[in-house]
Length: 279
Ligand code: PAF
Image (cartoon, rainbow, N blue to C red; front, side):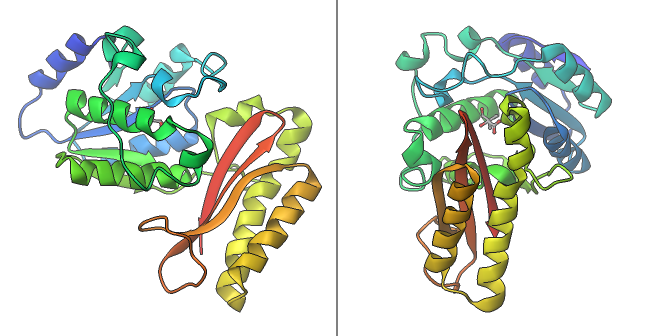
């Protein structure tokens, strides 16, 4: 596996590929788990060579968030990428990506979809995601790029950006990979204390139960959500949001006439977990 530590190295490697070679891409922030490896596996089936990036993107973290604490495990990550059959790992520096600093950088903003859910709770987060992803797609020039369905809002935002800016990359959505107890895999799960880790699966389970209940009984969405919030709060979660929204435009859903998902974000201590279930 090639390790490309700079923009120039990445560009040179990309230029060396034959035009008919189909390039698959899995962008990550490192601390890789089985969910990331699934991104690699999915794009591998659709391409001749797979590139993964590892870049902890400062622009998508708020001032009071976990940028400094975010787990950086480069050596282990590179070994996992190599074992998964990745052809190249792109590990740019912050200066490579933000030569004049984050605040002086041109930004990409997707309207409306970013006003709700994580966009409302984490102002500026999606602007950081879309800016870095547009840069990575411009540098790597992949035919296909994979993103995990755990971050369903992120997927919708990126798909809109790619469509609006006429980018030549197909976006592949990869189903959420879960621990055996149902907890969605996330690099942030490692922050959980022993007790909080034991409690965490209740979040995924509650989302699943809420989605099932609404689907099977046609139960009133608002009541089901209110009851689920109460269950989580009672168990010790701080609920950031728990909402039913249409998956195509994230508008609020009060009936099931279009595909709808329950989206949730909760805190256990200082750890923020997100997940969703399509009804
Ligand atoms: O989902 C992530 O890990 C990040 O938001 C991404 C897409 C790699 C951009 O930094």
